Image (cartoon, rainbow, N blue to C red; front, side):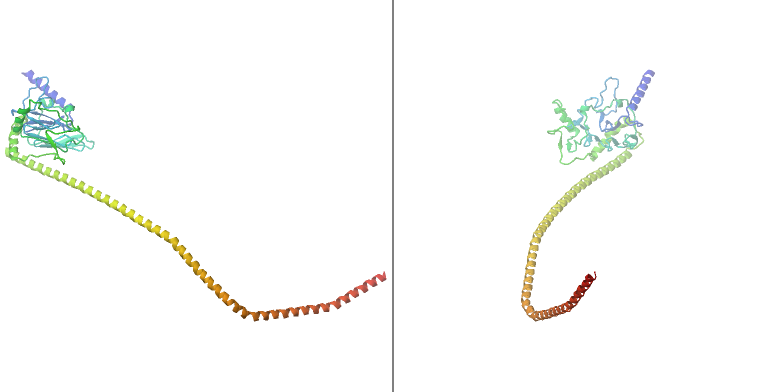
Length: 423
């Protein structure tokens, strides 16, 4: 007996060491995935939004035999849950018995039953229920605060947790494009689904599914909506809430051994407050989405109005420019004509003035000549008299000079004779 206990203790220690080495959240007891129980289904959610689950339809707690070498108790490990699982056209699990599962536009799980999940802008988990994950400025996980819900306050390690695994590559539904934004899957009540399964499960019940990003020709398990669907749906049916509480308390109490001193009324009050807070949050999200849609619509309208105004302004400027060009052209054409007309008028006025001046001169010339003729005759007589006086004066001077010349010539001749005689 001691050897068995010793072997089990070494086995548990080995499982814990294995979980610590592969942990995506250092310092967190959850290890590689966040594990919680919702309505009798144990989920293991991974950081990228993929998940694995285990479901015991007998509702007698979680009791798994790990003695076999190949354990396939979970969905991703290969266990057949088809009698309890509903699928959509992409092969995603949309309901496990009466637990609905919702996905975002990229195929990441955002709600399992009543537990909601959020992701930060870089794609990793940011919240699981009321458990908040914190990251540094390098997007590295640092710690978490809070707890998932009142039935999953603390993580309790179980040996089978190491066998949870991510889906194989050709089964994954997480994609880098929002291929599920306009897709709405069809769900049915589990009582109706059991009848449907019993009638069709022998006829190739699991038909081939579309892969994310693949072209879809027709949908069999859902439909396409005209607007992006709501990401989360909160169940508000009172009977459904009561059934969920009554079904989920017993297995979770057996598995996680919550404190039994907490009363059912306090739990229901806490869940009611949680439900109200979730409804308020969903309302705020819907308002934010509607506000964002209105803002984008208004922005598009403003851009169109501005574009129309710019187009009208360009057309107005073009019309104004064309009118100005034509006006300038008309003015340019009119200016030379006006200048030519002014020049002709100026030449006409000048010619008329010249003609008048010439005519006046011609008219005044004979009168002036007649008026000036006696004066000219008088001037000519005066000039003639002065010429005659000068002429007579010159003659008198010549007459006086001739005897003096003769005397000087005679004197010169005598002197020359006397000089020759003396020699």
